[in-house]
Image 1 (cartoon, rainbow, N blue to C red):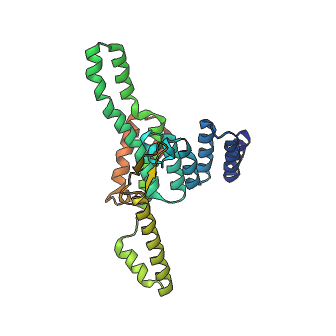
Image 2: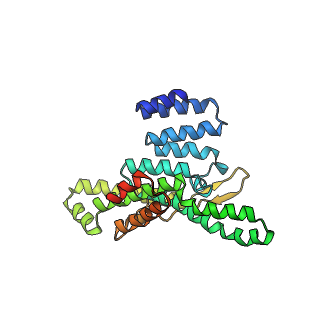
Length: 255
């Protein structure tokens, strides 16, 4: 792992990921080494391999939905950054907004403690909870997620996604052989998605369970916003309010 970290700082991300995977195979029961290996894979933009490695320690080896339920924010942030580097704004935005949702859930969960603390007269813990709530959005993970979402919206504004009419116009310009290949790819993708939707797994206890279906796995609906800059401004205001001393956020404001 030490050698892999040196290669990461040297810029050879693929070799670092390969060495980290080699170290992981030496002790398959070590969760920490598994997590470090997943980080190196995501830094090398090997998202599919990183996901397969990460779910080895989830319940029944289930898919990445467990990582979202467990609020595994470091994984969502790293995969979001990887998708952003690859130009997949939909999936990147989906990962960043998933982290933002975790913080919204944390805020909502605090309401249960107001009446409890007053009823049990745990006033010291109640005051600490209020202070925690005041600085919740200044946490490093929230700052990274909000910054990532802002970058996605700015890039979406600079290069908006194509409309349906533009896509049809491009299809009409293709040669018949190219159209045939495009339709075959679409059919294969639809068949694969249908198979994943209808598939059911078997847990270690022998019980069958239906995998939860994500209605927007690629984040395409998230990209269908009328004004990306207004969405980016919403997160920028939160960052200005809770982290006013950050130079990165000032750069976003200047943009």
